[in-house]
Image (cartoon, rainbow, N blue to C red; front, side, top):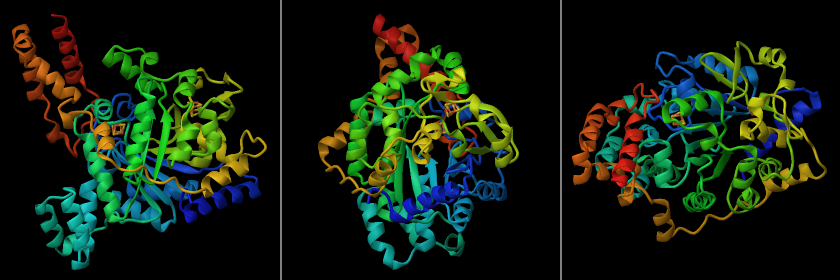
Amino acid sequence: MRFPLALTVKIASHIVKHKVRKTPRFAMVLQLEPLHTCNLTCTGCGRIREYSTNLKDMVPLEKCLAVAEECEAPMVSICGGEPLIYPKIEELVAGLREQGRVIYICTNGVFMRKKMRDYLAAVYSPALEPTLKQLLDGKLISDKEADTIRKSNAAAKSKVVIRPSKWMYWNVHVDGLEFTHDLIVEREGVFKECIEAIKMAKICGYQTATNTTVYKETDVQELEDMFKYLSSLEVDGHTISPGYEYDAAKKDMVKRLGKQPEDFFLTRKMTRQKFAKIQEWGEKFTIFGTPVYQEFLAGKRELTCTAWAIPTYNVKGWKAPCYLMTDGHYDGYQEMLSKVNWDKYGVVDGVARDPRCENCMVHCGYDPSGALGTNYQRGDNWKNFAYNFGTKPKPYPASVELMNTAFNGVTIGKGHLSQAKAAINSPRAAMNGAQAAFTRKEEAHDHEAHVGSHCGTGDTSERDELLAKIAETKKT
Ligand code: SF4
Ligand code: SF4
C-alpha cells in the first residue's frame, strides 16, 4: 500500500464520521506552532518575520495538548519556528500519541540527530549494537557519541524521548538539491545534515517524510532529481506545495532583498506550469496529497479553498483564515469557525473572492478540498481510494551518479557562501576593499553561537552583500 493502512483508515473514518453527522466544517490536520523561534532564517519564511521569535513566547505544553483535543484533528503537524527547539517537544509528542493522533514533526533537520541519540541512549542495551555499528559505519554518529549512548545513566534512561512509531513522521524541510536548499535556508551544510538525519532515522526505524516549497526559481528537473534521490533513501512520503506571496514574507522580500513578490513567488499560471508533472510524480514517488489536489495543481480542475480543515494554532490563538494569511486570532476553534466569514476567501471558478487569495494553491488551503469532496466530480472517490490503497512506488535505485547530482553545492566546493568567500578573497577583490567587508561580516556573524538560541532575526545582509560584491568583482 502507498500509505500505512492504519493511518489511511483513521483519516477515512474521521471524514465518514463527520459526513454522517453532516458537520459543516471540521479539522483534518492541526498545524500546531508551539513557538516561532528558529535556528535558521530561510528566504521567504513568513513565520519568523510575522511573529515574535523570542523563546519566552511559547504555547505551554498543556495548552498544546488541549487545543489538539479541542479541534479533534486526527493529524497534528508540529511546526513553528523549529519545533525541536521547543523545550517540551518530547512530552508534546508523547501526549499527542496518547490522544491517538498521527504526528508530523516539521523540522529543518538540524537537531534531529541529537534527538535520535537521546532516544538511543534511553533504550540502549547490547541488543542495539548492530544499529550503532550501522550508524558508525555510515558516519551518522561519532565514536564519542556512540560511547555516550552506551554509557547512558539513569537520567538519560528515564528521559522522555521521541520514539519511532508508525503514527509519527519526521517531516524534513528540503527545498531542492544541496546548492539550492542551502541557498534558500541561507546556510551551507544544512542539506547534508538533513540527509544524514534522514539516513539515521531510517536505520533507527522512524518514518520519514519531506516537505518542499516550490518557488519561481525552482527548476522542475531539479525537483524530479530531488525526489529520485530521496526515494533512493526510502523516504516514506513527500509533501510538495507552491510558494505563496503571503503578506509577511512579501514585505520582507521587498524590504530586505529589494525584490518584487512576482520575482520570487508563483502566480497561479506559473504554479500550473511547475506542477504539470505532479501526477506522473505521484505514480513514481510517494507524494502525499489526494489525486484530486494533484489535478488541481496541474491545472486540470478548480477547487474551492477549505482552509478551516487545516487550522493553525500558535501563541496568539487560532489563526484565521489560514496558515498563511492573518486577519485575526481566536481563543477557540469553534469560535473561529463561527465568527469567520469563510465565503470571503479562496478562489471560486477562477475568481478570487479576496485579492490576496488570487495566486494561492497551497496544500493547506486546497488539499483537504480534494479529500472532502468540496468540488466533487464523478469518480473522485474511486481515484482517492485507488491512490491511497495502490501499490507503494518502489525506491529509486541508489547510485553514485544520483548522489553526485544531489550534492552539488558546498560538499564539492560550490556552495553559495564559499564561492562568495573565494571571490572576495581574490587579489582583485582585496584591492577593491571587498575582503575587508567580508571579514567584518564574518566576525559579526557566528552561526554556531546561534544554535538553539534566538536566531530568527531575518537578517541576511551578509549573504546579500557578498553576492553584491561578487557581481561587482565580475564587472571589474
Ligand atoms: S526552518 Fe526556515 S522556514 Fe522553517 S521556521 Fe525556520 S526559518 Fe522558517
Ligand atoms: S485561498 Fe485559502 S489558503 Fe489560500 S490564502 Fe486564501 S484563505 Fe488562505
